Structure formats: C-alpha cells, structure tokens
Image (spheres, rainbow, N blue to C red):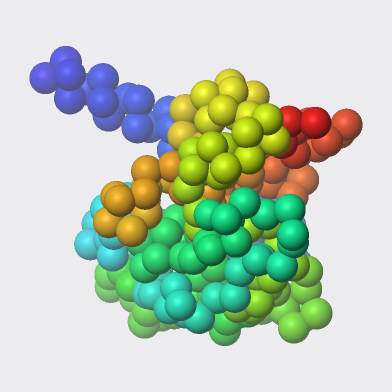
Length: 227
C-alpha cells in the first residue's frame, strides 16, 4: 500500500509540474489560454494530447489518432558535414518525433481531434479550435523537414563517425540535466535516436521555443556539438 501511495504521489507531482510548465504557452490549447490558437469549447489543457484511460499508446498516454505516415516526411540530409548515419536518417512509425508532427504537420483542423472523448457530452470526438492562421505560422512544418535539424538517427553511431565533432551521449544528458535525451525507435532496435524532443521540452517554455536549455552563447548546440 505504501508503494502504491508513493507511486501515486510521484505521478501527481510529475503531472502537476508539467501542467504548471505548459499553462499559457503555445502548447496550451485550452479555451482559457493566452495562446493565439486555442479551443473554443474546452478549458482542459492535457486532453489535446493525453488521456488517463483508453490511450492509443500507453506511453505517453496518447489521445490522438495517427497523423502522417513516417515515410511521408522528408528529413534534412543535404549538408556535406552530416555523418553517414544522419544523412541516412529516417523516421519509423514508433519514432518520438511523430508525436510532435501529429500537430506540427499543418493539420490544424485536426488539433481538436481526440480518440477518447468526454463521456455524457455532445461534443463528439472533436474540440473546436480557432485562432491565428496556421498556414503562415512558423509552427506549420508540413512534411518537409529538409531545413530543420536532423532527426531519426542513432546519436551514438554519429559520435563514432564524427570523432571529436560530437560530445558523448552521457555529456549531453549532463548538459541538459535530463535522464532521457535520446529515444527508442524501430521496435527498440535503435535505443539512442535523436528526435525533436532531444532538444525540445514540450511541457516547458522557459527557454523559447520550448528548448531544453538556453541557447545563449549556443549553449544548446554545444551540448552535442564539440566546438
């Protein structure tokens, strides 16, 4: 019983911290948010991405239908300085970056779409979303990521291919003060995949735009890149 209570308490603390960090940021789509794009008929914050019951995926209790297929995204591969593994990068259907792209792929009309709707209400599976033009927003990435930082590759392999050019994964984790910086992908055959959330903290906008740390003096970049 003590173990159960402790687990519940830790979960409550984690959820509370995420809630406090995301409130009134651009990731807060609730009707009471100060964001320019938000719901017109729901004051809930977490429901746009998460649900405690009947989740599509247990981690992270995902509440959204699948967006574009992984193969539909065009990744950054044009730089001559890329390591071989980064140049051959690809997203898989279980890549963490697809969670981000579920909204950032320009399908604004689907922002209010949830799998697990509220019971005993007439709002159906959708929450009405309105606000600034998504077509001209910098957050509208579509499926063309060729001008964005590479994702979908093994960071450890990149380190071995660019000796002296990249810091060890352990050093990156220390720099970010986070336990999880790289992620599993391709049915866990890749255990250190560089993803959007390697650099972005989606629940915390202390460092805009949702960066894991400040980029003043290129701090964020230098966490990985040895210069």
